[in-house]
Amino acid sequence: MLLQLQVTISVEAELQEFITPTLTYWRSVLPKTPIPSTIQQLLHAEKENYSFPVERPPTFFISYKYAATENQIQNDPNARLFFLKHNINPGTKMVLDLTGATSAPPFLSHEQSMAAPFSSGKLADILGLFSIERGSLGAAAVRRALAECEDPPLDGESKRCVTSVETMLDFVEAELSGDDVRIVETAVAGGGSVAGRQEYVVGPAGLRLVRADAVVSCHLEPYPRALYYCHTTKHIETYKVHLLGSDGIVVDAVMTCHTDTSTWNPGYVGFMLLKVKPGTEPICHFMPQGNLIFALLSKKAGIMG
Picture 1 (cartoon, rainbow, N blue to C red):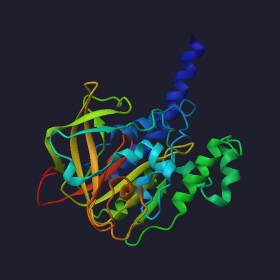
Picture 2: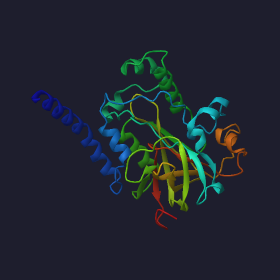
Picture 3: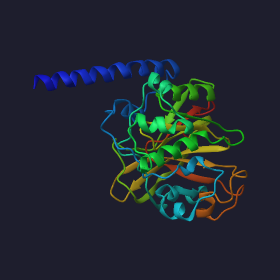
């Protein structure tokens, strides 16, 4: 019992030594912004007690210049998160899968993130660092994540893949010129996780606009440590939507709408599913749990319209 207690204290001390500088840096960059539960969970996650979600497909929300395959359209649960803005009204019924990674890997410390290899040219080193076999599903997921991160941004877009909270904050600070930043994310009322694919009904408030002058979207990617693909996108609106699940769960969901899609690939999954053409109607999608929106609030009004 004494040995177990000593081990527990040692692990907690090591964890606290890792977390404290991160919390201090967060308060220095975003003093008005509470740390969201998603980030706290990824900071406190045990380094050996997580699942590497290799089965997740590429994130459609960031691949606007690529055409979707028929298999992706039919089998990816994320594909069913797309809607046209005018179809989301009080009482609207829809089937959604808002689940994120159920046991996501933890963040690296800032020092580890700076020292760890992170490029397609270093793939063998990365696989060795995380003990991932070549030719495995895990190796394919790593290769895919690196390719997405190295892909050039769209015109007018800024992007950065981050494996530490400090690097995420640096990107947010560079892109959002102000300190009144609010984080919005899909969350269950009272805490917890959504329970898979089910039918939801839009609440009586309908769409509630997040009044922001600029936003940074950060999408959680499959990788052996916490990896977020963070980017800015022009012509975007962010909404909160109150959803009631068929199992009784209440979800405050985030939905983003892209108001100018004229430069997107005509074969993009959103166009294929909704049967619209680039530059016509706003393409909207819900954000699963684990994804984050950093919103620089407009000084003209409160956060919700």
